[in-house]
Structure formats: C-alpha cells, structure tokens
Length: 288
Length: 260
Image: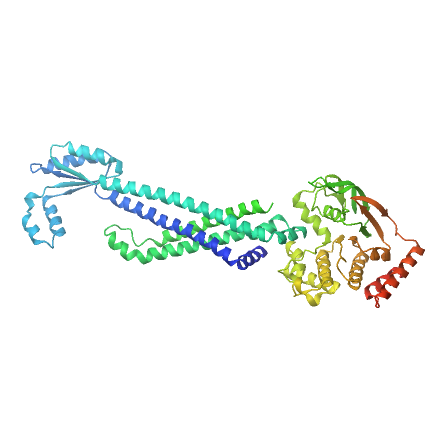
C-alpha cells in the first residue's frame, strides 16, 4: 500500500514524463489491437472462403444423373471433401434468375437448356483443391472445372504478409517502448538518487526502494494498454457499419464482445509484463 | 558493544581513510571522536553503519561482525544504530513529520503506531510545533533536533552523531548536547564526532582523537583532572561572560556534570 502511494506520488510529481511513458505504451497497444483485429478478421475471411464450395464441375449435355452420382460418390470417397452439392439445370436457372432479377433482358436470353448441371464441392483443406480438381477434370462427363484457389491463394499471401508486418511492427514498438520506459524510469531514479541514498542509510531494504518504480512501470503499461484498447475498439465499433457494407456476405461483423474482452485481458497481461520488465531493467541499471 | 580491531579503510585513490584503528566502546558510553578535518572521523562512522566496507580488520556491533554482513541484513543493522548525519540528510520535499515517519514506514510499522512514535520523539526533542513545516522553514538548531529525532525513532542501542553542533551558535549547540546527554542517560551509547573542543572539555567524557586516520589518543577515562576541569570551567565561564549571556543549555549541562 505504501509502495502504491509512493508510486502515485512519483507519477504526480513528474506528469510530463508520465505522459510520455503512457503515450508510447498507448501507441504500442494501439498497434497490437489493430493487428489483432486484422489477424482475427483475415482468419475469419479465409475460413469463410475455405468453407464455401471451392470447386464447381459443370457437366456435358449428355451426362446422365447416373454418371453425375457416380462421380460425386468417387469424389466423396477420396476423403478430402467436406461437402458435395448437386445443382440441377432447373436449380441453376432458378439461381440465375434470382441473381439477375433486375435485368429482364438477361432473363429472356437464358433458358434451362443452356445452363449445365453442376457439382459444388468443398474440400476440408485448401491444399486438396488441386487433387479434387484434377480428379473432376479426368471425368469424361465434365466439360469445365472452376475453382477459387487463386482467390484464396492471393488472400492467404496478403494475410500472411500482414501478419508478418504486424508481428514485426509490434515487436519493434514493444522494444522501443521498453527502451523509452527504461530511460524515463531511469531518469526518475537518478532524480531521486539523494532520497534513495537517505532511505538506504535509514534502513530501507532494496525492495522497499524498488517496488514503487516497478509499480510505476506496470502503471504506465496498464494505462497505455487501456487507452490503446479503447481507441482501437471505439474506432472498430464506429467503422462497423461501413465495413459491413464493404464485406457484404462475409459474416465477420460485428466483432464478438468475447473477442474484445479476451483481447483486453491479453493486452493487460502483456502490459504488466512489459511495464514490470522495463522498470526492472531500469532498477537493475540505476539502483545498484 | 562496538569493537574495531585493526581496521583499515583505503579508498580507490590510494588514500587511506583510517589505518589500523582498534577501538572498543561499551554499552552506555558517551564517546567523543575528535580530530582535524580529514582525520577519518566520518569514515569511521560510515564503517559502523556499513556504508563502507573495511579494507582490512574486523568491526563488530553487538557481537555481530558487520564487515561480512550480507546485504539483506544491513537494514537490520541500521535499525540498531541511529545516525545524525553531518549534512543532516533531511528530505526537502517532505515535512519534518514525514521525515521522522520515514524509517518507521520502511519498517512496516502500522500508521497509528508510527504516528504516535514520531509525535513522542518530536515532543522529546522539542520540535512537535514544527511537525508540519518543511526543512527549509526551520532554523539550524531545529533541523538538528529533527535529525536527532529521526535517528531515535527506533530507540536504537547506538547513536552516531557526526558534527551535530557544527554551524550552530553556542546556545543551540548546548541545547543539542543536552539532548544527546539525556539520550545517553536513557542507556543509548553515543559516539559523537566533533570539532567543538569547548563541548569536549566541558563535558569531560571519554575522547578518542584521530590524526591522519590513526588513533592518536584514547582517554578511556575522562580526560581532565579536577584542577584542569576547574580551569576549563573558568575558561568557559569567562568566554561566555564575554558573550554577555550564558547559554541556558550549557549552564544546565554543566550543572548536571558538577552534580555527578
């Protein structure tokens, strides 16, 4: 309790240094929150695409229902398939009509006969797309195979790059904030050198002197984490309507409150670790 | 109680603070440590609170060898020894009350108990009225009393006072000496480093003289014969007569000494 009081006195007596420490911590946690949203969101987007039918095999005119069922069974037996859905000529027309209901000209041009029957196949893993696609192409009843591998591949590589950038940037900011905190707390220790000397001569233990500085680091970390989280979450919630219209059809938003709470708790834990680590380094460096 | 056996402290520059000092001080003694500046008085006091480690020799306090005391035991040693520092070392951004409360806070004593102890000790040295003033608002004598109060909060076995009357006028010096004598009478061993030979001669206590880091003289018994003491008293009286007014503290101290 005494250490907390002393820590608070340290903070109050040098507000600009405290502000600098809190700002750098806020920036770090703002970046961590932002990249957590991107990583969480992108994982959900990939999952969405992976769960969608990724391969569509269109059948020739002469393919019978027996031929189609046989091929569907063969694909299922490969063990790489999550689901197989048969779309008949009639269903294809219905779907076409729904998608183009606002364009009567397009509706007039298309009849049930020109739309082929198809199989929509989802694989359990994105890596299996090639094998399933090859198997379908080898069938004499299949006229064309279309799959979204390229889209997912591009998205995956973008997300992978984003994750790497986020990770590197977070590590960089965390390192910078640790160094700045070491400098700020070290400076405070230097300012209080005489006071610390007196305390030691008056029988203070090492930890009596150290605790307020350690708590100060933790305080800056926790306040920085809270500010970073509040700003990033506030921005996300504010931008949710806009993002929802942009990501139409992908069930990503609104972000679950549980995710936000888990993120806050994780950031607070990280803040305590970063704050304590920085002040401990300062204490080791300046309080010998 | 305090024992130094052939203690030498050499500094990094090669100069020695003290050299082959052997000294034994019993419980309840009042000992003056005198000598010119740089003779090693402060070094000796700093060695006794383990603010320095001796280069050679053995130092024991209450039968504990403090030379090889682990660092986590040093706070415990410092609780047994109250120190009035030459530069007082009062924290300027805290009130006198907070300064005196500090060692008690560090010891983890409850707020109420610490407050009561601090008030008691401040009342004992006569600075209770200045409790909520800051050090800059106090006179030299009042600050010296505050430093003594802070040194006494743990009721230590030993009190080390480094030049407690330095820079004080005669009247205030005697008031401080009176306080130290009272503390000594209550059973605390007092070791006082001083340049004030008037006080040393008048009080007629054991005096250890340091010169160039070595003990030049140790009067295990009071330094003066009755004749010398009488002469010393006459000298002091004459001197104070010249100052027109005899300080109350000195008169009181002398009276006590004479009654012994």
